[in-house]
Amino acid sequence: MLNLILFGPPGSGKGTQAAFLVEKYQLLHISTGDLFRYEMGNNTPLGQLAKSYINKGQLVPDSVTIGMLKNKVDANPGVKGIIFDGFPRTVAQAGALDSLLDDMGSCVSVLIALDVSDEEITQRILLRGQTSGRADDNDPTIIRNRIDVYKNETTPVFDYYAQSGKSLKINGVGSIEAIFGRLCEAINKL
Ligand code: AMP
Image (cartoon, rainbow, N blue to C red):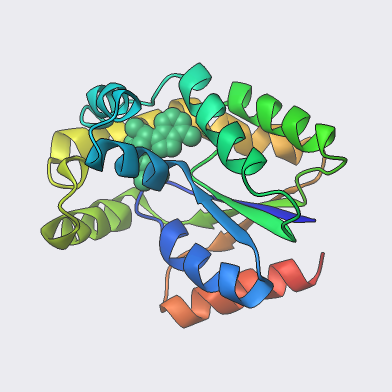
């Protein structure tokens, strides 16, 4: 299996690039943010719980997020590989992902971080907020909080996979095609 963690701050282009990568490499795309938004759209108990965190720019608790991720992986046996977009966001989630994949006789192939400055991602998120309908894309205070949470709780995941030589960083600024080219180059070298 090719199991790719697409990593980077909010607004760094993970979702956009994941859509191209799943097509090229025939992978399953799992975005925990999309899964939460689906639940919120259907006003399920999980959606209501997630909303209370997401609309403050905070992380949904690990136990909830890991359980949801595991269900999604279990529901898709026999896939060629998975792109994890927006997961893992904490070291505890990374440990849970490793054991989940280990149980399947697999592992994380690589973590690729999209490197984009705070100024650029803030502009991108505000622009996306004009059409995304996402409450968490429209408020500068919530956006600031999401960036802080990324720095404090999520960047340790980069270091966690760096210990086994699996973390890579690529320039996340430029045209969508140029960034996609950089990602493919990194993946094709694996
Ligand atoms: P995203 O679409 O990836 O930017 O996620 C939107 C929001 O969903 C985040 O700001 C978090 O509140 C929540 N979320 C998404 N993925 C996770 C995760 N792996 N762990 C905890 N919360 C998450």
